[in-house]
Length: 526
Picture 1 (cartoon, helix red, strand yellow):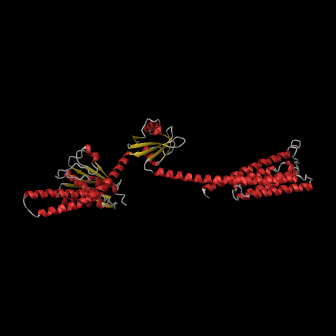
Picture 2 (cartoon, rainbow, N blue to C red; picture 1 turned 45 degrees about the vertical axis):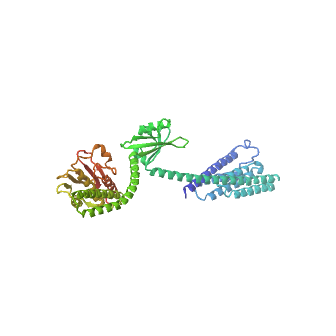
Picture 3 (cartoon, rainbow, N blue to C red; picture 1 turned 90 degrees about the vertical axis):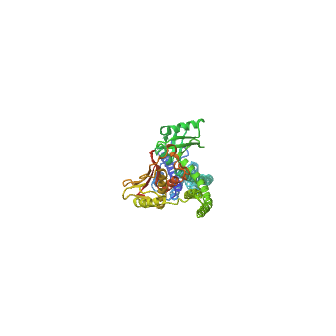
């Protein structure tokens, strides 16, 4: 059974229970009329405490108690239980009316109440059947009283009018019951729509990358999402006093509410992160305000990614256009070198060749930005990998023996894409060689691992002057370089490839020498 149907069904049984309680009060009054002295009873009641009436009253009481018990403990076959109780009312009231002197006693009016209540409780079902049964019972008892007890013949006409009232009450109650059902169905559908919308909104808020707070005018956080809890270290339960948790945010919100503050403010989170809060008023009648929290560093990264995406598309297009004429220039230089005409020409050709090589390296680095395929990580033995890599690098860069020193722990392993690690080390060691003295031990590659934490550290250290403190924040930005022969893309590409493999590339805090560290793992290779 669906939630709405279950709640509607419970409402029907509850109404039926109230109906039985009303009938219980009615039978109590019936007993009271039998027990009171006849001088105290109304003049139109003639309820002599006979055995028949007492037996009828006891039967009625037992029937009502049974119906009340079943309505609480056996909530099945609702229409059957309601019909049985209404028919008992018709039987008891018609017999009581007969004993009290017929239609003139006025007891028959009680059936109007029973019919109306039954129609509302049963939502209009079977109410015409109940009215027909009440009409037959009243007319038959009255006609029988005319022939047996000498009731006034005109009282049959009064019984007919009362019977017409039964049908009128039944029809009106049925229309009212149908109206109640329509309104209930409309309320149900609107409630379902509101609940669905609330669930969707709650899910959207929970999945947002930004923190969201719903704050009352008195500074109480009445709702928040998990991101806001993590950003501000808030308690998971609400409400929370914003003034106690984040006083600066509360002061900024108060100033904004009074019209003297900005719609956004930056502040430091408990964990030291820089956050930006943006205030927005809701249309709620209680005047709650929304506070959107964003990580400033993530905003900068998003802006950087957008800039790099645009720049990457532009530079890749330019690089493709440059490569063809660059190849033609290189080929023309090779042809000119075959004609030896003097030392000046050789020097010019060497300058031409060096610049062609530099331009070709820049084009390759630019194109590499768009070739960062998904990492296919594998567990690499660092000692073997680095030995082969250094041998290849020494041959390509004409490195003297002893310039590049390896210090690698035995059996150290790293989870990394083989081609990506080759590119990372090529960029880092190439950068270190350009800034080093190229003497013995000028560049060191150290690898340290921790079996307990699964962490691996690759250190690339050179004996150069190090990175100046003024440019340390820019060292990983694309196209930023401090070397005349650099492209400004090597470190940026290396950091992006590390991130693709779940590793981190950082610049060590020491200033005396160049020192870069790759933090990877050896236990999360998938």
